[in-house]
Image (cartoon, rainbow, N blue to C red; front, side):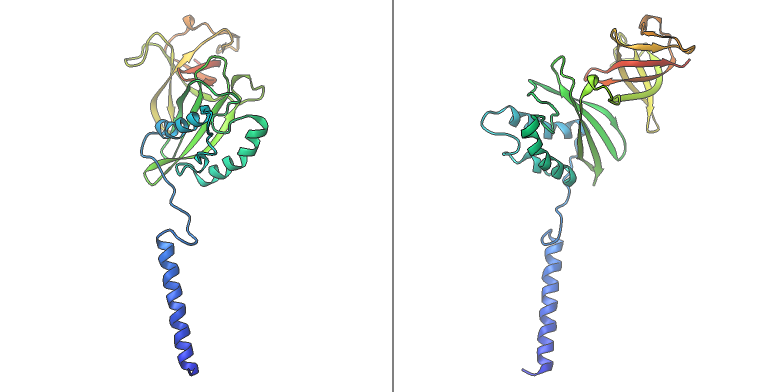
Length: 251
């Protein structure tokens, strides 16, 4: 075979290799990350569709979420899958579940929306049992018309000495609210991400502190509230509403 023929054969062989590589890339083969899976359900149901199997596997005596391969669930973002893989060893050492954010297995779990925006959302997952303060804060990202779970952070809850409040918002106090809202409770009506009309139930206890316009601070007395009063709320997000820690009355 002369040199010219060798060159032609070599070029044709190279072209064939390029065609094969391009084809494999197009079908998600060599060198290609699989497409991120998303859910078209709302953020809470997207979270629960992942959390319910995880919780079930944690409760089981014959298996666990790691054996079930749930840390590789395609609804999770790649960074979160890597994070949970690293947390598996820590879980064995500390007993803290990196998804439920609990050291014991709760009998029931509940999910509540923290916020939902155009491109992101956060959901709080917690135990339904009284006295369980640990919480999982799940951040979702919008992609291709759906949601995927991008991160999970564990919060120690109300007894953390240096914690940030899971709910901080300025709005107006109202009790005269239309159904399906319950007018037995005070609500904070607020604006979020430019969208007005969001509401949250206010839950008061003996530790709820209120500060008046003139700076006086005392245990909150909801019977003294007038509506609509502008206020700044800081508290802990629970399934049934926000547990008020501090309420600054502004008008």
